[in-house]
Length: 238
Image (cartoon, rainbow, N blue to C red; front, top):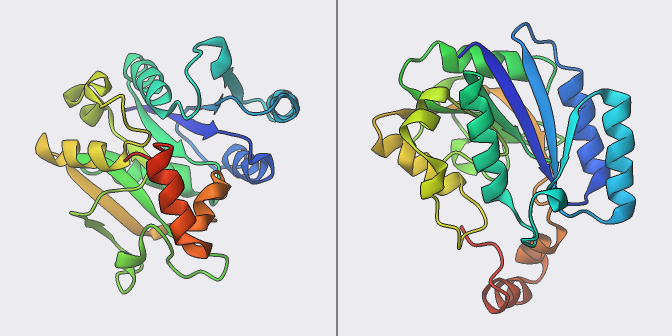
């Protein structure tokens, strides 16, 4: 691993996405990196904003409507495409979701942390709220601040680096196309293939849970409606 491919999948939620983009592009990083935003069928207005932002900040924009007619979410296509490109470039694949704000040193520190551990499959930053408290999806890590450790729980893809060794050992073509999200599966597959997943609670990133998928806020405000939508419309399959 001698470089990074950083990606952000986007479905509307443009205001939070712009925070993500600005933070990534302001990173203090020594290792060569590329940054790609995958636009997953955002509205025409938001797609136009992404195009303008790509010109302003210099990231690569991939509009998935040009690659597939499959309705959003297209996380599987994003992961398969990004894996192929990262392996061809001997690069780690760092996913930064569109409701996450990295710190200036996050990208380089995750790269260094993963590179220093030969058995690393996934290197994940813990997530915090605006007050600095560890929040969803890493509430279980409270009390384990300011260190890095092997976790048996899955790593969320809020801000996670997938190493080339993991991507060589596990072909994302094996992922279940009936699902929407794959962090749980890939975390388990990393362990099954002899690798370890590390959670870095000393490299926190700010996370506004579900800002990229507002309907999921119903899980907390109206759980009956959330689960009704989840099961009747087949949403949010993990």
